[in-house]
Length: 156
Image (cartoon, rainbow, N blue to C red; front, top):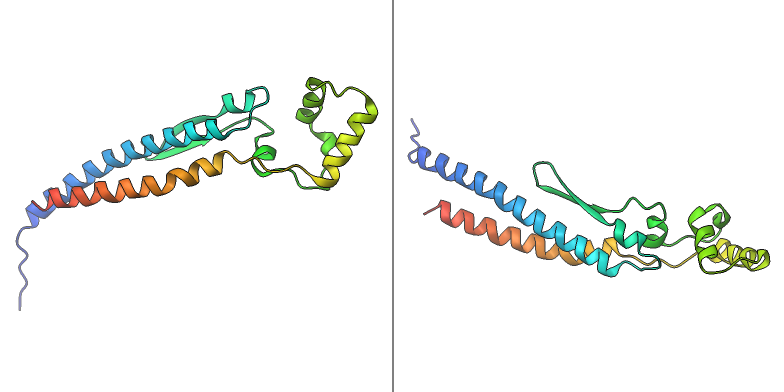
């Protein structure tokens, strides 16, 4: 008994074509989605001084097939997820600066505000995760469509 496979050279050529096209497609779509998430996160970001919004940046890694959007501002996590009650609000340098900027200078007013935040926390004002959630289905739909087209072309 023997098995003979014919068309292996054509299959190999098609697979190499798909691999090259696939990488370029992935790089293009990752860049597109990364830019979309970056833009949308800036639109959704709450603004006081603009520091948080201006800090939102993106980076492409792994030969352009990974995109990262984020911020290096120390209070970004508290804005995105809020602050739970029962935490040390008085330890936050960002909060201290905010109170000064807002003219909350009297000790009793500062202490009342800090006490309220320590007891009740702060509400979340998400901007990064919603931006990603909005873009994700579009990214996967575009990738699926592009790879389907690549397989059709490779089979011709």
